[in-house]
Length: 290
Length: 277
Image (tube, each protein chain N blue to C red):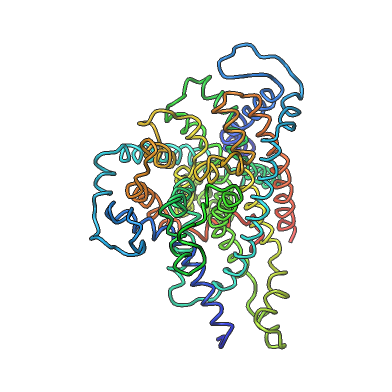
């Protein structure tokens, strides 16, 4: 009785996932080596032509570069900012609960709605960001920056919005790591004459390295595979300047009807996921042993 | 305990980050209560009410747009997905935590890895699958597909909860004559109630936050969820009605933020895959 109860309880969930994730993965591989389009009934096997074709188009190569820039810059900023913020939030103070709620907002809010808020904050005519920068004397009110209209600024805006969105998540994960360290270790270091910041950067942070890795891992995977901020803010524009791999796959496969081309572009996300999975497994294995 | 400049710097960092991260929501709130004439007058200080505040944007949003319908759609999909998630994840997590020994842990991590599979990898084959099942432009497509990311995370989190319950509890119940299955239903499920609530809340917020699948599968205006309806369909022509749009964002963001804040610590335990003890 007991021998089959375990598998019987586990089976439905695994069957559901195997069917609804496994099947699409197979279908995706099949589409990527075919010439399937919306509305055409016959499909042929075309080998790796879709991948080769994608690699040759400038829009794909642009998207690949933008995806890496988008991920690397935003997550570097996130880890730096989140470390600073988590260290500052570590100890209890009056109003900490409220601060945590405020800090958490960008991550909890649906990303499409947060990005819509930013579209209004960075509006070409009524941008409150520009108004504040002008009031501080940092930009010329007669000729304010077009945050979403100029290629380089648009990329910067998309990166900053994504940083804003993922920073809270990294912060709470790091905070969980920091509070798990026995208090007396940093205190002993402080007694030994290390200053506050020095203690933190030489003693505390190395101790929570696995946690930093966890925060970075989720941040990188969620950022590299996200298209929402780009889609809402710029639709990949101006002139593909902010196009990333997921948004390009969407425009090609769903809006353009080129299913096979879109599926091939999506599959370029796979190596990053594989890397993420391996890192996660290593962290889990290590914590299983200790 | 800590005195002097270091403490001051810490407080300053907290204030700067809290202001910068929450400012967009303050601006949403301000926009939603401002008169249109106030919003679009470049001579005004945008951070103040230059004209008296108004509820007009809120009235318009709820009375004359499809927004209430989208809220109801989101609610419906959310509740259905939570139900499916619990139905699949609770037994699976219990089985993995208690009855399957060593490979239970491995299978649990394997399940958790599925959570990393993003919609942007699968939306094209998923759209074919949805078409084959004749679920295009139906909320059922979301109810069917969303558990693919809620079940993995829920199973993983619940596995942790079940493991933290002492085995003696079920053993005692089984000595009292209950079968393992009824011991699970009558003893374990009630004890892990807070875990079930956490998982339900989390699954619901994942539904609320999802954008890519909903954008791909649904096309009718009346079928939208809040996450897609507001940024894509509440914009009429080229005109952005920012007052209504920002009110619509706030309604979806603030309640979730408050609930989320309450259950945060438990969620974080799940994300840190045991790296925090």
